[in-house]
Image (cartoon, rainbow, N blue to C red; front, side):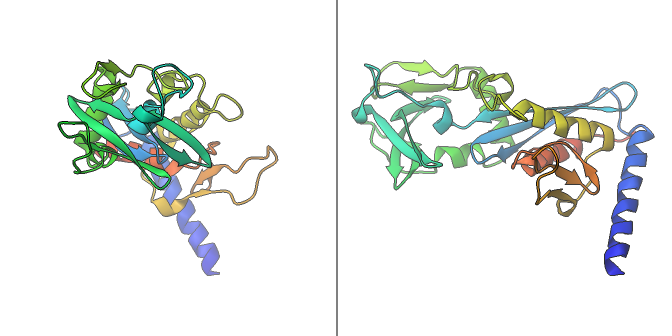
Length: 261
């Protein structure tokens, strides 16, 4: 009985939210807001929400890889060796990155700690002088994450083959661009990264984002397509990415900034 009551309440909550969106949102047309979130354990997600002339929402999601995914190097090339690189292990695979990098005018040095990597501020001789890890600095708040996206676009993440040497801007990744939306080699088969993001965007454009995290769940069993899809209340979104809530949360933050009529 209690389970049935809970299901009815969830359905009523969903119907009320949907009716608000279908009635054309009460948001002031012409606005654009954005918000950021630490996503997938390796990136900074960005959600941009626009209110169209009829009051409906247009949602766009993108993600920038964090430095340790953008400063990858090939040890077989002439300019890289164990001497000027650091390494880390991710999902059982070892990756090598430039030991010295520059971000927004400050030089950082990479140090391997166990299987992890940390970039901290470099001293006068290129040695680590401590301070906060660069990733933690980047994801510390909305302003720092917004600055990271802007700095990447402006070529302010750079790699150095030698300390105090030429700093070369990072303009691409192993998957294409420094942003996932324009990286055709990233998750290019099956559901694809873009396919999942489209599903999230379309759901929010149709139904809004005013749902508690407890009502956002992923199927425990595969469906007839062999996929474990995410649902919001009782509506199947079509998305399967494990970090669904990361992106959904970023959009919620952006929508929360919109002004009402």
